[in-house]
Amino acid sequence: MSIQSLAVFCGSKNGNNPLFTEDAARLGKLMAENNIRLIYGGGSAGIMGTIADTVMEYGGHVTGIIPKILLEWEVQHQHITELIVSDDMHIRKKTLYDLCDAALILPGGYGTLDELFEIVTWNQLSIHDKPVFILNTGGFYEHLIRHIQRMRDEQFLYEQPGKKIIILDEPAELLPYF
Image 1 (cartoon, rainbow, N blue to C red):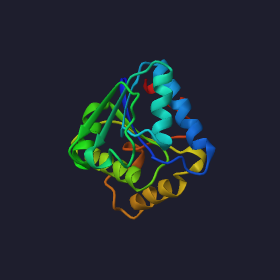
Image 2 (cartoon, one colour; image 1 turned 90 degrees about the vertical axis):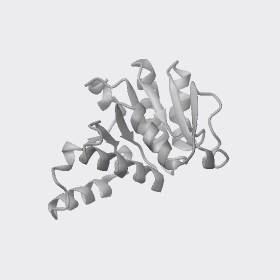
Image 3 (tube, one colour; image 1 turned 135 degrees about the horizontal axis):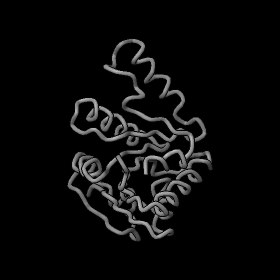
C-alpha cells in the first residue's frame, strides 16, 4: 500500500525538547516533497502548527479538521489548503481516520494518546486496516512502547503490537511507505 494521505496526531504545544518541532518540520518537508497530503487537527500552535506550516511552505496540501469547541482554544490555522469544522471531537476523529491512508503519532499529550489508542483499537476491530506509526522522537514514547509490550506479555492483546503499530526513530523511515 502506498500512502497518499497521512493523518498526523501531535501536540498543540511544542514541548521542552527542540527535537519535537525539528522532526515535525523534517516530516512536513518530506510529505510535501513526496506529494503526501497532511490530515491533522487544524490548529496553528505547537507541533501541529509546525508540521502544517512546513507542508504549506514546501507546496504541499494540508487538510485540517477542528471541532467547533476548539476554534478559540487551538486558534484554527488560517493558512492551510482546507479547514473542515466538525460538530464535535468524535466526528473530528472519524473524519481524520476516513480521510487518511495511514496515521502517524508524534509527541503530544492526552489528546494525542486518545487518538493513538482509538485508531489502534479500530484497527484491531477491523473497522479499518490502516498502518499506524509512532515517531519515537528523542525516545519520547519509550515508556509507552514498553507498556504496550507488557500488555501483550500479560496477555491483554490479541497479537504482537508490531502488527498494529510500527515504531520509527526518524521521519525519513516513512519514505518506503510513500
